[in-house]
Amino acid sequence: MRAMKKSSIMHTEKAVKVLYRIALSKDSNQRALAASLNLSLGGINYRLRKLTEKRWIKVMRDEEADNKFGFIYQLTPKGHAIVKESMVNYYDAKRRESSLLLREIGQLSRYIKQHILS
Image (cartoon, rainbow, N blue to C red; front, side, top):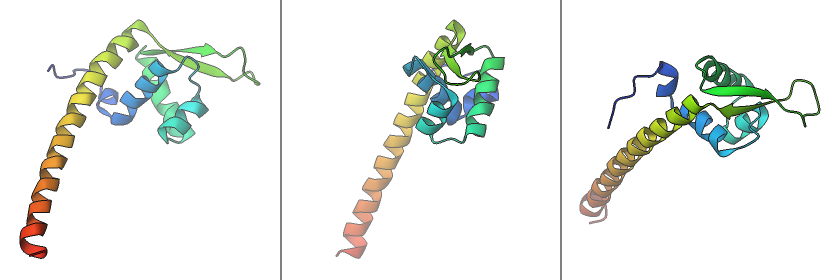
């Protein structure tokens, strides 16, 4: 597994989730992204701005929006590459975390059986 040498924004779970959510949706707008990721509009706005500055996403005007400020977000080719790498690393980290939790649950279960329920 390669270590990621990207900017610190990619080291956050929320930034990875934003990129992944954009990859899944054809019409990602700020409100939909904020709601689906349980982030405030300000939080999603900050992340989208940083991802746009890195040129990992592009902003496009939403022709179907009710107001002139409707935008949708799409991954750039560079963004797609980042998502692939990030999701593999994210998956590996979550799998390791899950293994540790399962081991701890086993230890707690044995302790309870030996010391509390006996």
